[in-house]
Structure formats: structure tokens, C-alpha cells
Length: 477
Image (cartoon, rainbow, N blue to C red; front, top):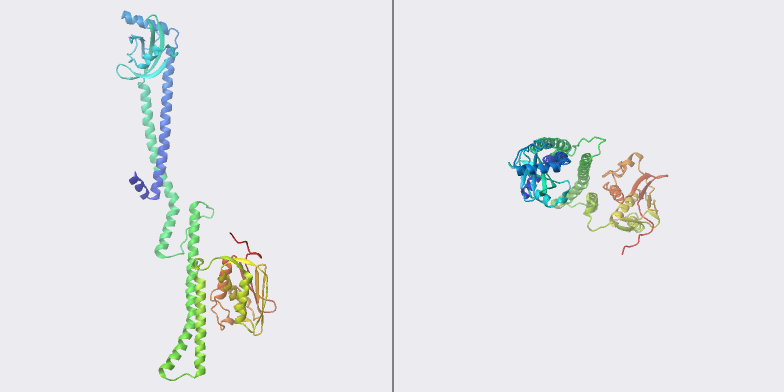
């Protein structure tokens, strides 16, 4: 049995579907055929029984039985009228003696049923049962109790079942033939339906194999717009998956290309400065002290810029599951903004930074949220003029940072959150162009919104909206 199950599971899906359809149809056809055969058999036997009843329900039946007994005793062969010549008619005495109508076609073997009818005269209209004649042929028997001058007896009236059994055999052969044709047709239909139903699955399999073989994510499976069955939903899901993977690969390749381009500049400058210092040591011609300090300061600045760029790249490439040390928790947004303001004041001591903050609690990763706010404040510090003012406010979950710098040109606003993008006026300033990308990613992961716009009177205003509440939720026990 287990071998058959393993063999069945090893078959292709369309073959299994065809076998299941064939088995189901075969079971249904067999059940219908057997039921039909038994119904026809019952009808035919009812007809035979009715014919026997008509012969038994004759008023002169008792007289006929007496005549049969008399003929049996006198051993004469006179005809008894009223009994069909193609039937069996005999009288069985209580002692087992059988008297047969001389005109009957044969003798019926006495059975226990016949003897029971003689002993129990309360059977009324008699008992039907199957029996055999002297030659072993099947007959339908009706045994009726009767009282004679010689004591209790039973009239045994029977009719041959040869024609009835022939009809039933022909019907069985016909049903078997029709059932076989039906099963074969069902198997063929099941195979055709399986092929038609699994054709989209074949296309999907070919597409998956093509992607695995060529890594071509541009392949799409055609889907009818008005179709909403399981195969159509699966095809749409596959198309969506390959589209997302293609976009992800494109962004990854773009990130690698942009990162390589951005890393090349500080690395080239750093290598040039180090080569100057090394050549000075190798040739024995010292660099003037002022120039040496300037080179070292430049190397330090480039190392700092390089470290910041690498940190930003790591932040952008890290997924949520790559943060084992952090968990999303309830964070006091006001405390986070104040911590970021302390760092911003250290980086721009000559600036005036005002803050008007109201309590607000959000669910976030504390360090990621603080890093995003610090990046926004760093942008404001970087572009603010010396002695300028930065205005920070937090109300109902909306953080606003407004500086009084040169502002962002209107044509540059759509690109401010792109990776490595920097406006032409800012390319001479330090930075990697990843700060606002990190801000956008962090805020969107928290279900919030972030936007930059030109402020009235000059400068830029950054707005961050985060979902939350002014009161912290109660702690769970």
C-alpha cells in the first residue's frame, strides 16, 4: 500500500488529477449501475410474483388441489384446467409426499420453506422464495398453505426464471460496457481538463525556471484583467514579486555605483595627501610645518568624511532584522528632539537655536529616530549663515525645523530625498548626500511623513509627522 502511495505521489500533477477524476467517475458509475441493476431485478421479480399471485387468487384453487391429490392417489394423468402449461404446480402433503399436476412442466424441489408453510397455516397468501426444479434450473416459487380432505398441505406454484435471468445478464453486460466507456471517457476528459487548467502553472514554472537559469527578472506572465481565480492571483503575485526584485536589484546596483563614485573622491584625496607625506619622508625634504599641519588636518577631515559615508551606507543597507540590539518601543519624542538639539548646538555654537516643544510619544527605535532628527538639524546648521537662527517646534506630533539659509531651489525639491543627491550649491560642502535619504527611510518605516519646502522670507522648513499620542500608554504588567 505504501509503495502504491509513493508511486502515486511520484506521478505528475496532471496524471494524478486524471486518475482522481477517473476514480471518482468510476465509483459514481459503478454505484449507479449496481443500483440500476438491483432496481430492474426487483421490478422483474415483482412482475413474476404478480403473475404467480394471479394464479393463486383463483376461487377454485382448493378444488384444483383436491384434484391433484386424487390424480396422485389414482395415478391417472387427466388434465386439470386453469393451470398454465409452462408453470410448475404441485401439492406437498404434511408427510412430505409430492403430488404433481400432470400438465406441469416439471417438479420443484421441496425446501424447508415449503415444509414450514405446511406446519404454520397462518401464512395467509403464501410465501415467495427462490428454488430449483428437478434439473437444477432456477425458479420463482410461491408456497400457499391449504386444507385438504387428507390434512394440511401446501400448493407449490412456480415459474422458470430463465428469461428473467437472461434479461438481467444482458443488462449487467450493457451496464458494464457503458461504465467502461464512461470511465475511459472521464479519464480522457480529466486529462484534457488537467492540461487546460495547469497550462498557466506550466507557464509559471517555465518563468521561474527561466529566472533561475538566466537571472532575468524582466519576465512577466500574461494575465487577463477580468480574471480573478487562483491561477490569476498567483500569476499577479509572481509578476509583482519579480517586479519588486528587479526594482530592488536596480536600486542595489545604483547604490553600489553611487557609493563607488562617492568613495572615490575622498579616497583619491586621502591617497594624494598620504603620498605627499610619504615622499617627504623618503626624500628627506621636509614639508614646511604649516603645510604639514594643513595636510594632516585634510587627512583627518577626509577620514572623518569617509567614516561618515561608510556609516551612512551601512545604515541604508541594513534591514529591520539586522538590528539585533534595538527594538521598537515607546519613545518620548520630546526627549529625542532635545538630545538632537544638544548635539546640533555643539556643531553650530555660533547659531541661535530656539525650541518650542510639546510632549509626544511614538513607537520607534530610539537611536534610529534620533539619528534622523540629527540629520535634519545638521542640514539646518550646515546651510544657516553665521549668527543665524534655527527655529524648532514640536506640536501634536509635527516637528518643524526652519532655517534662514539660502533655501532650496524649486527644481531641486523633488530630489532632496534621493540617495547621494546634492544640489549644485551644496557640493562644495562636506557631506555624502545620504542624510535626508536616511531621514525619509526612518520616518516612512514609522508610518510618518517627511517633507522639505521653501520657507517664506527665505530659508528651508523641514516637517516631520509621526503617529503617536501626547500621553504615554500604560505599561503592561
